[in-house]
Length: 82
Image (cartoon, rainbow, N blue to C red):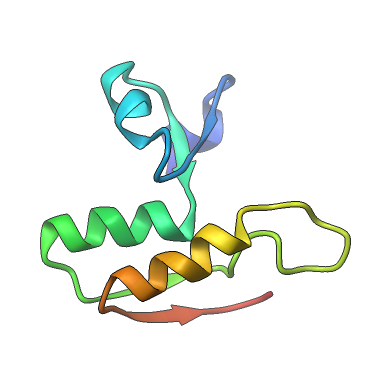
């Protein structure tokens, strides 16, 4: 967390760009759908998130991918917030 907080050039890691982010050794935060992909690969069935991006008023985000990603995975997702 400290590294993420101090990093200057962070990226938003999504399902679409996750492999490129990893290959380029970039620092970033994952979307809910990317977190589900990683959790599934690691055998993690339950995780917690701050909320689904883009569901709050006025935001343009990847909520469609986050919600559709839940259909592709079997996970218990605890969310807090939006």
